[in-house]
View (tube, rainbow, N blue to C red):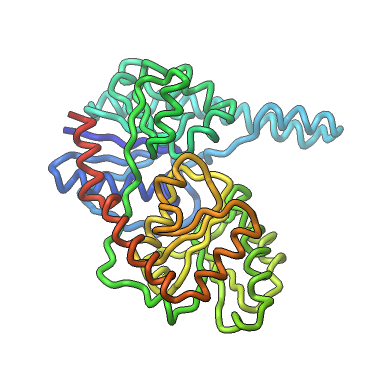
Length: 375
């Protein structure tokens, strides 16, 4: 059986790639033929590691995926920035032309490959998939339902392709919300943790807070820095530190916010297991998450998480008070963080429970849900 994972950007180390890679490699071990096909290429030179039995290809290695919207063009005109508006419009028209070419290339590719099932990873891809392949398509929405429904483009695509494709959500909460809105062909498959840690972090002696995240607006790293700097002002925490791992469009902004020498901006990591094994507590301040890979990775290393409520999956990924904490506001976050830093017995209890709970998200269990769906 041939399974094709379709994503918008190739050669990227992001969450979509990690999910597709993890599931794809597990399917290969079950005897499936797996391809990960990207529409366009990321220009950053990453060295991606994956099972070479998996086919990894890109349709268009010349054009970037990103473009300007017509709203942005109009906004520049209103600002009387005519040259900029013309530049944006030209870029958009070129993108529309090349996207039509990509759609044609995709049809030719699919007709040659003849996949049994297609798993699309971004809502924009649904418009590129030929009509005769839609009944073979599962669209995996890598975001919470609430956030997806609030986004005009995503909501339009979900309604357009309702009853034409099947929707995969990352938690039961999102699936149930989707069904309530009439998206009846909805299923739930959790993200899987991508590694198994034989050892456990020395959470008592590490004395390290950590986050691994894309440095973008929705992750609210500025709020995290504000919380941690308040905690670190108490001298009894002088031997603790916070490591922020990741990159993104807010990197320079976040760098300017840091005033405490105990907070370090570390850059990109391709070894989250090593990073989490050196930590004590994982911090998440995201406004929304689909189903956080970093929390699964922290749990696997026995590192409990403190997070804000980030949507439908938060209570399915964190058992509040048992495997980690879900904070209501800043004061609550600060108090919960201090309680874990102060109480070794509580920290160890949460550590043991979060690692045990993570058995639910091992790929050996999750892959059976995918196979059941295909069958």
